[in-house]
Amino acid sequence: MGLSEALTVVERARALDRPAAAARTAVQRVLRNQAVKDALHGVWLGHPLHPSLAQFTLGSLVSASLLDAVGGRQRESSTLIAAGLATTVPTVAAGWADYADSHEEQQRVGIVHAALNTTAVACYSAALVTRTRGGTGRTASLTGGVLAGLGAYLGGHLSFRRGLGPNQAESVPHTASEEWQPLGPLADIPDGEPVARDAAGTAVLVVRRGEHVDVWSDRCPHLSAPLHEGELDCTTGAITCPWHGSAFRVDDGSVLHGPATAPMPGFDSRVVDGVLQARVRTFPGVPAG
Ligand code: FES
Image (cartoon, rainbow, N blue to C red):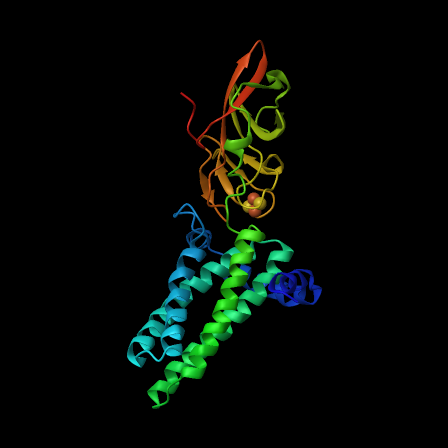
């Protein structure tokens, strides 16, 4: 069985649902503060924080294993292990924050990814402890390297095959029509209530407030939820995603709260003979010239 087939088995393993759900509940209990959650998701960064931190943590740890594998100097290897372990806490916290707002299949892979990485961290810690007692810690370091490599493979699968992290609305500015498309009579758009319309095959979210109309992609950038099913707060001008609670400003499409980190792709709108029309903006949030 190849790695890809093994991953399919993991994704379908219902036996993982109980520990995965327990982990999700525990994370949700601990991570209640919205500002902390937003920081860990990477809202301030404009893309997920976990992969960026993991590059440093894993890069340092696996480099130490490589040094140990080729008989490099223990001092440099230990420095790399210490640097990797020092960044483990924020890396893990950001990973768990993303995990708590993911699909079932993603959580099954995520729990195995976390278990591999936790064991790898334990191995590297053991290597350092062994060295303080005069041992080489080489076996623990090499074992940690193998486990961390497997963990990284699962992390890549989660992001690039299962789509946890990437902007799910990225394709909209490239696939939606740049020509004006009719969305139906303006009179049919309710005031203060998000509705869905079809713009030549692209689902759009229409928000009317009085005579002002905003049109955005209806696909949540986090995991593609239909945003028109979300809650609109006319006082704050925010729409909240029905699936995991990301909030977006309907004036400019920007992210107010994660887990989404990318803005909603926007559409220009106008009314011609009482009919609302829209065309996609090439760059999200930037009106066409
Ligand atoms: S799909 Fe997850 S917040 Fe919208």
